[in-house]
Length: 494
Ligand code: IMP
Image (cartoon, rainbow, N blue to C red; front, side, top):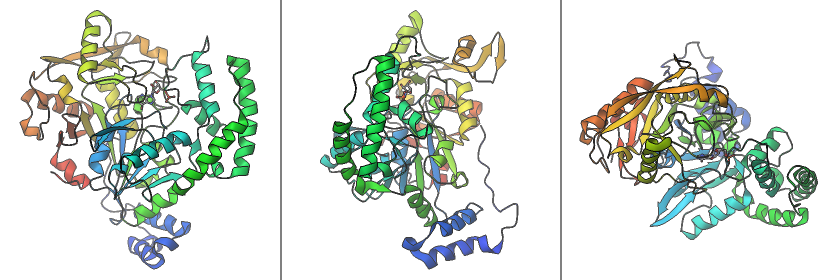
């Protein structure tokens, strides 16, 4: 994997006007409220060149097809990180959390919300369904979770409207179209409108006149298209306007220029976790296209999806299960299928409770695919890996791992650009010894069975990334934190 190189001192001399000392003076003189965009630019420009006073940052990214358990690592990092920012996707994502014994599925609201001292940001790269957002906020409030003054939504985030769902359902069910197996949340059509420069942003949602015109025009157009292509029933623009104007009023207090907010936070020395949604193989550019989601779920999306410059990203943490799952259609080279595989696949599904948090669909299961993990490392710049659900493999006496790919009998490092390219791809397996004993709730590497330590060491050797955290059960406490990971990220060990 391509680890980050830490630059102790700048290669090129930095001019006096952009020195770290000058940057601190800018902050100190202007204070938080008065820091203007220009000053922020100078601070960022300076801090990205080696000052220690900028807040730390880490991107949490799924290294597989999503559902790797990113929520838990975000939860661990919020012990010491001040801000959590979502940068891509929408309410297609879902991570399960337990608050006061009650189970919640967070879909749009970042994991930081569970710690009242943490600021949670829904960045500009996210597509937000206002009704889904308000529903989530209401259920958090009802559970006594603080959401006022600590949760902010970007004024530049795109809005999902009912016609996005109508278009998606029509398209997914239309004969002759490729069925992606989406979450039916309107995510793809909302990103289509964004890129087509005809989307509605959160700032526009708050502008009642603009909202009415936008909904009227869009409904006219989408109703015609959906009727012609999919024979869908038309949507009522007036009713839609009423509902969304009402939602806009409720959302208004959360709306901010979050790029400014995040850059201020960094300049003030606050640390930020960028919370990825979905995973590398679902990325619109780098995933198994067209069986992907419609956003940049890889680490590069953290910069464009929040307005924080790429030069401010310190660490990329890739999350992988100890095995592999995928939900929805599309290539999955190491999938367990067929007779014997079917039974083993079902076994993994049951032991790992592999059912979608959002849709409840059973996940497809398979073995760890190291070539794809190396690919995820390359695309994201992963330096630390977190291995989740190690305990799901506890019953096995041997664990097959995909160590290479072959096409036409020749080994290759290249990941196919076409979905049909995966049909020719063959996995080379190596059987690792299993540990056939419980690792549940183990909290130190030393206490793991020897074969489990060897399994993790093999992942490190094959990917070039270090394993910094291992999850040995669903609970916050069922976690192993590696000392170097703790010290690099400034975490508490207990
Ligand atoms: P969409 O994001 O709803 O458009 O769905 C596109 C593909 O991404 C489908 O295969 C979904 O199952 C998959 N997908 C979207 N979000 C998630 C997620 O959070 N976890 C796992 N798969 C997801």
